[in-house]
Image (cartoon, rainbow, N blue to C red; front, top):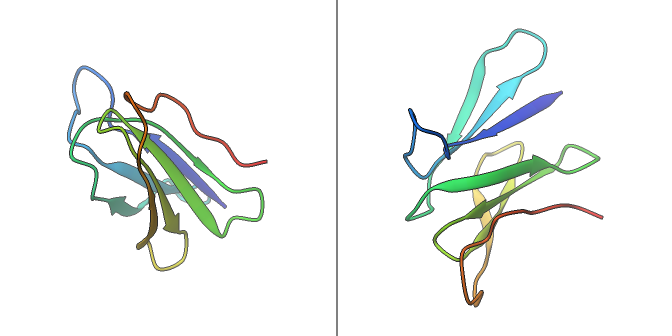
Length: 86
């Protein structure tokens, strides 16, 4: 089981999304690639993907096992403030 956290706060604005283990609280990965603050990130219901939304006008889809970006959703006219899986 995983929990994610974004970098959009007063103390930690570095354009990353962090992935945490719910079992022991360990940081499993730091997802890097956005060029601006990440304001939201979420794990898919089956735990296989992570999506992050950023002020850089993109959302990124990440493999939740390899922690690699597998797709960039760009073309947004302004910053992306929220992301979700259906």
